[in-house]
Length: 149
Image 1: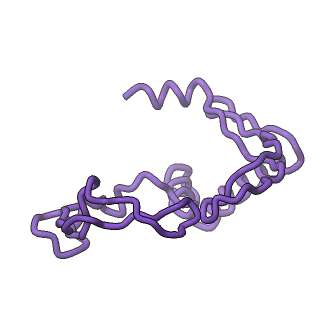
Image 2 (image 1 turned 45 degrees about the horizontal axis):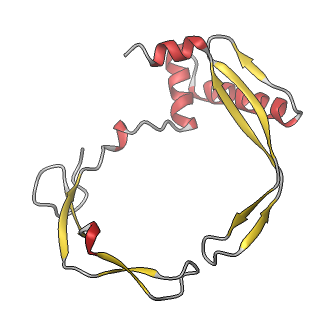
């Protein structure tokens, strides 16, 4: 953890917030009939922020670096391999197919039907068009590895 502000303790940052029960719904036009406004005094909170290296999200560049070190490739070759793998998966899904990687999982396309939704700003009913979305189903070996800890 790291200190990103002027907090009073190590590994903390100070920010201004209000107690949850001090927020009230007041008349106004936010599209949903009102708006939240502060009714009570502000308080200081200490917030823990993780170090950038400890975040769980891995970028494509970081993945390519890991592939390079694990497979003994140079950086540009590993980046090209990672890009080629993602391009192949994308092309197969765009063509309507599935990609199954033994021991890892299956990438597929799911169809979302048209439906009615709401504009969150105005509350107005809107039509959401039918669409396709990528889906990943973890394989048994991946699930076993994730649940081993």
